[in-house]
Image (tube, rainbow, N blue to C red):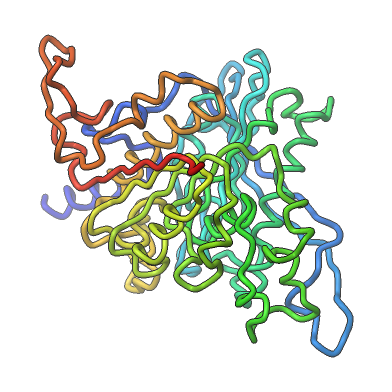
Length: 426
């Protein structure tokens, strides 16, 4: 009998990416829209090939193809039922995870609601387009079109020399933005009239956050441009802050940046003065014990030095680099003797479902404010910095005058969190 119960319990497990805990903050919950999903292959036909351009030869160009997963508000046909299952390579490429979501594959995009803001998701090094699929589905249910990129040379099964990622990551993000704009204008396309790319945000995790900073105006330091590992033919100058043409490549359609444990500051990608001109609103998330991107000299230093930005820093106390963004540990690891890569999805202190629920709550408030103009969302951002200082006082389901607890959070549920806000410097 014990064997039977244990077996059925294991079989009942699944990698659901739509789990909202009982103590999740208010805006973490899914919205009212049904969700569609499609997989696209997009090709940039003339990109410098960092891996094959040798010092002695000329710059080689190639067709750089990217796989992109797109989630969007959908209109379901009769018989279509939510429940897409995504087959995702994991941090251990020998293990494939089956992720259970809410979307409907190839459902018709909802056009009756008008054009909706675009959110681009950019994973870490390595990663893939499904690493933050829980955010993709969640935001689509709230009236966003979400494009999550498989960054070539930077995925679990295709991890190549680091300089390819450093050079290509910002370009991939801008290329996908252009392609999504084209899809919204194509009368025969499935997203015709559905995407408002003039109101775009980029979500960048780790190396994706690095790409985001470059695209918002944080050009490379001269130290990086001249580093011995820099690509041949001075290609790194394309992203250098000292390049007089660098700022011409910044895209005014990007209205907000959401950087989760962004990598680069601690490794001197930027010096402090390379960041002072960024004026796009930003939301940073970080673990106070981030061992990869750093905290005091990493994410916090970025937060403090993007001086022209109206920005926030949400700190997860005692969390490491992998605590916030990734999907929970796939159950396939539980049935494998090879635990290589398991730590990619786990943290010693923080439950990944709880941290991702918190992330989606603040992403919703931040994007609704800056992409949709919803001023009422400020109440979810204008909080006491230390959640422990808040007083929880609810009477008859309404906050009393004494209530100062973080808006949208059930009692005790904001423990371990710190939210700071800095306005642009004059």
